[in-house]
Image (cartoon, rainbow, N blue to C red; front, side, top):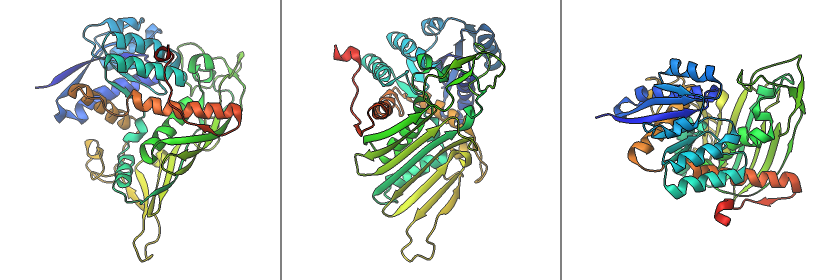
Length: 395
């Protein structure tokens, strides 16, 4: 018998539409699971976007008031795809209503908000999930398996980067992502959160960091509310101030002795969406790049040196969840397929009434690293990665 899970989505910009499609696709790609998401209601403060989403994805109704999503008795899970400054308010209301919650990263404007969000959900016992979708690439999951099996020996190095040139044009509009009041962190929250999540998943907890940040384009054309995305290019109109960082980097020392460096930028030229990592150990190495996400470079010592180099693997049915989308090796997956896998794992955790990963606990571990990077940018010195307690739990 199918298990129906009522879904409400808040925020119908680019990411809200991606999540809506992902729920519909998950019912098909993972059909044998018996889990059937039912799109109950979508919300956006721009009515045309909310109405269009209802028509496109088959929501039963739409609204311009996000509170109506949480109040709807048919909604079991609330999907938060709003700008970062709304995360805390929406999650507080959803948790108080006993709704399970999917929230896009970085889960709040800053590390303190992430800690409060994690506390709110944990105290009432609702299930949570976070949009670290790149970890669901079949070859990233295969890399994780190889590391877990000890195929790389003792890990020694992790390097991660996310170079996305979506803001390389200085005429790119001043969307909410460029404003500290609405977004909080800039690329630390937008891009570095993915890199840190990957590092924590593959290499382990981070002990301390030292880093820096920079804003290369301090002013941008004002955006038209409710129109376009952070990829939109303007021009010819009034300018506004960019109030968060375009670039950030850090050196890392992991708790297990792994040495690392991470770097992100949103205004870089040439690179389009290069989220990549290299990880080395005493007996092997791995290399992956999202721009070629269906490939993984693997190096393992063979004992005689006759094949002393990287082997290129292509994604295929032998790798986790690939066969859900394609029956043959080399027939690649794309970005939204990763969101579909992500949606399935969230729905599965709800159906089984168990907390899955990544949830708000994992988001908080990421936020603790990001918080340490922010501190080191102010002090110029190494900073320990410390646990963050919400202000409410401290009082």
